[in-house]
Length: 91
Image 1 (cartoon, one colour):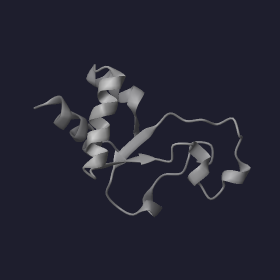
Image 2 (tube, rainbow, N blue to C red; image 1 turned 180 degrees about the horizontal axis):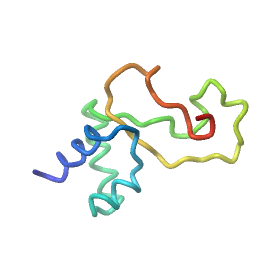
Image 3 (cartoon, one colour; image 1 turned 30 degrees about the horizontal axis):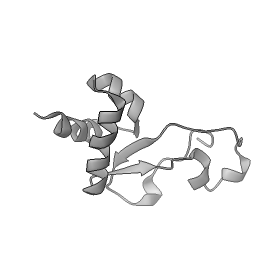
């Protein structure tokens, strides 16, 4: 199996969004290379980025600390946007 397919399979087996940093460690791949592989799957419509600025996409964003800045996280691009988890600051 190619590393590119292994990246997609990791997301298929995940029960939550994964960060680039987590995956780079797990797959033993340089973060810059992994970023390119994830970008490939995003372009193909298989993955999507989860709210990059944390609370900005959450309905309760006005109640979160302005300091919260979460790492970029990705998930499979299936289901509706309403199924996306909320930011860590809002739970």
